[in-house]
Amino acid sequence: MVGIEVPKPESECNDPNCPFHGTLPVRGQILEGIVTSDKSERTITLERSFYKFIRKYERYEKRKSKISAHLPDCIQVNIGDTVKVAECRPLSKTKHFVVVEVKGEK
Picture 1 (cartoon, rainbow, N blue to C red):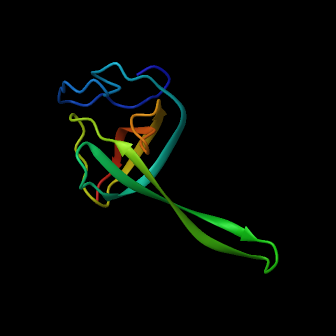
Picture 2: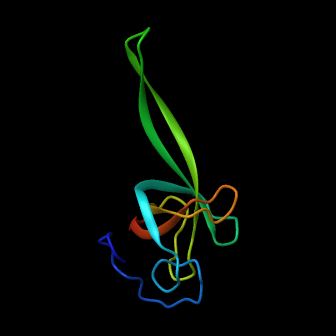
């Protein structure tokens, strides 16, 4: 893929929304998160944790955000895996990211 240094998946797929074997261009943010759900077809939900500073108490609180991402047929993930997602055009009402790499397995 142009602009992102990730290994190409070994298996092939016929998914038109695959950044490797289809025609989906990626641009913008590249994020990492932990897979929390893979129940939807060709979709995963990943969670990202971060700390937010609360000025009144001069302390940090832990927050999390959930992101829906498209999962091409050529990439296999399980719940608990760490994945890298890249921003793309909107694929549905909530999907604006696509999985490009599985970094760590559970």
